[in-house]
Length: 166
Image 1: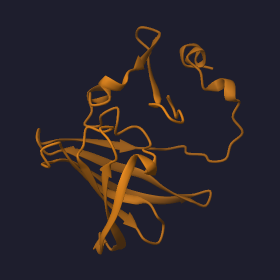
Image 2: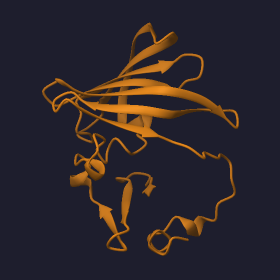
Image 3: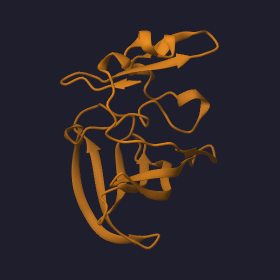
């Protein structure tokens, strides 16, 4: 569970079913791999645009899609990455590829969308892969049973609800 906090670090919680406990992910752990995948906790968060300075570098075709290539650099030390290059589908405004560069400006990871589906009028990546270029390893993520604009009780977003399976 991720909760965005205006003017502060976002709060992240991970439910550990074997222990029946919830663990809070502190900001110093954002660079750690998310449950032994190639995604870090930071990668699993939505990053607000104002946390970065963005530059449109060029327009380029990627997998048959016309894309904007955007460089994003953290405004301050709020990321494990020195910069990210994102390929944004110019028709759907969805990120279909991202290159992640470490503090030494070395390309270390790459995210790629493999399937883009329109669900309830919203273009959604349902199949993607994150590749760790240093360890030569990748993690696939497939999403299913996606619903948008469903009424959800605010009380559902709590540590109590995570632990009780509400």
